[in-house]
Image (cartoon, rainbow, N blue to C red; front, side):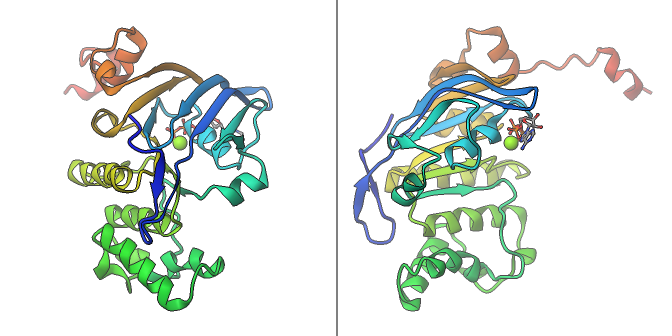
Length: 268
Ligand SMILES: Nc1ncnc2c1ncn2[C@@H]1O[C@H](COP(=O)(O)OP(=O)(O)OP(=O)(O)O)[C@@H](O)[C@H]1O
Ligand SMILES: [Mg+2]
């Protein structure tokens, strides 16, 4: 459950009120294609909410509504009580999104990738920026990579750099799109721990979109499951361990029938 009503700045220890997200009867269509059907849920200030669901079910489209990159066809999304599309919302609430790809600038070193936002927003002088960047790298155990280019890093390191870059923005709200995809189980567990510790230490409100069942069961305060653009489950990890709904159970604990005709050609 939410652990604090305040987000602590990782660099100054200054506390600001934690923000919440409310998704209200959100529907979204692209032409005739209805992607989101009347989705409603909220992310409480200071909690980790994990949103799961099969590929193509509208999870990334939903995240884009929260950061104001998509407009609802109907319904609305509120961040800290204000419309996610309003310019003032983005000015008042510091939110950071960690993209699946990492979205790092390949021509910049890790250090310069992290320094980009504070330099552009002139948050402090270069010495102050250096302190923030090195602190964020230290939190993610990445001090040795500062002068490396993204192409010199492993997939897991790039994910951690993307998280460190988001952290430099001193977010009250962190959004992660598939932070553990393409990672081995050990690295996935490490990233899950990092996400949980950012919440525990700094009380950052966190929304994670993920296919990773272990991540959801281990770090979520609450979990939502989407299927065909609808929210079909909203509950705690404890409730997910013994799902009562057949669709939810089928998604989380799929049974593979090796005798199914689709596997016939594999037999020799
Ligand atoms: N800008 C767009 N224009 C038209 N269709 C779109 C657009 N963005 C997304 N879609 C469609 O919306 C549907 C949901 O896409 P989305 O990326 O949200 O899926 P997802 O649940 O994140 O899947 P995955 O788990 O594979 O990342 C897909 O059918 C996609 O083709
Ligand atoms: Mg997606």
